[in-house]
Amino acid sequence: GALAHSPIGPHPAPTMLHPEAVLLARRRLAAGTLTLALLVTRTPAVAQARPATPEPAGPLTSVADVIRRAREAAPASRIAFRSARLAARAADLAAVPLLPFLSLDASAVRQTLNLAAFGFPGPSAASDPFSVYAGGVRVQQALLDPAAWRRWQAQRDSAAAAAGDADAGRDGAATVAAVRFYQVLAANATLDGRLADSALAAAILSDVEARRRVGQVTDIDVTRARLGVLAAAARLTDARGAREQARLDLGLAIGAPIDTVTDVIDVLRAPVERGMAT
Image 1 (cartoon, rainbow, N blue to C red):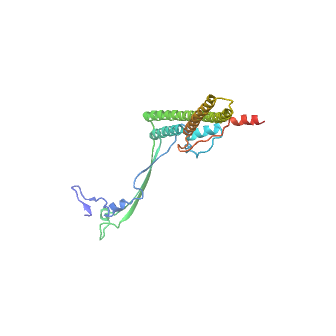
Image 2 (cartoon, rainbow, N blue to C red; image 1 turned 90 degrees about the vertical axis):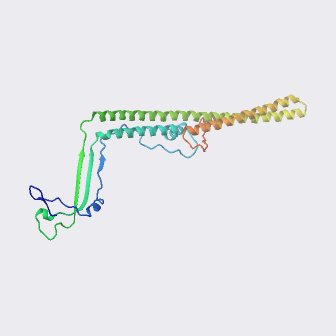
Image 3 (cartoon, helix red, strand yellow; image 1 turned 120 degrees about the horizontal axis):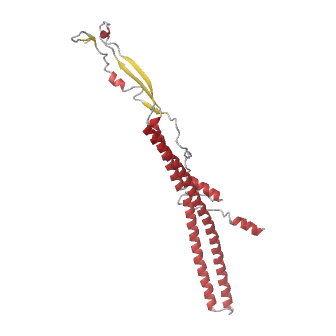
C-alpha cells in the first residue's frame, strides 16, 4: 500500500525498488572496490636487469668474455638473481600495511519511488523507473603500527643481504669459469704436445724399421720403437679426453647449453708464437 499504519500514526513507506533493479544491479559500472597501494618506500636495490639467457655457442676470445658470460648466464648466477628478487618482493609486501590505500567505488542502480509516501497523489503510487548513480573515494593511512614497521625493516634487511649474496654468487661463478677457461687452454697445449709425441714416435719407428732392414739394429730395437708408438697413442687418447672434459666443464660454468661444444681461442700461445716468428 501507499501508507504504512502504526499505533502512533501514518508514516511514509520506504522507497520501493523496481523489479528490474536486482537484475540491473548486476550490471554496475563498478562492481566492487578498486584498491591501489601507493608505494612510497623503496626496498634495497637489487639488480633489476633480467638475467641473460644462455648465448649461442661461440668461441671465447678472452678471460673477460668468459667472466661476462658467467656473471650473466651461469646457473649459480641465475639462481642468486632469482633469490635476491624474491627477497625484494617479500620486502615490498611487508611494506604494504604501512602505505596509504586509495579506494574507488562506483555503482548504478535502477529503482522507483512510492510517490504517495511523499504526498504526491496520482493514478499510480509508483514513479517511473530511473537510474541512480553513486561514487566515492576513500583514503586510508596507518598512523602507528610498530609490528608492521619491524616486519618491514626485517624484510628490507633480508633483501639487502640477498642482494649481497647475489653479487657474491656471480663473482664466484665468474671465478670458477675463469679457472675452467685456463684449464681448457692447458688441455689444448697438452693435446698438441701429445700429438707431437705421437708423430715423433711414428717417425722413430719408421727409421728403426728401415735400419733393421739393412742390419744396423736388432729386433728388440724395433719392438722398443713400436712400444713407444703405442705409449704415445695412449697418452694422446688421455689428452683428448682431458681436453673434452675441460671444455664440458667450461660450458657448464658459463651456462652454455649442454648439447653444444665450447671453443676457445688460445690467448696464451699467440704471443709466444709471434715472438718465435720474429
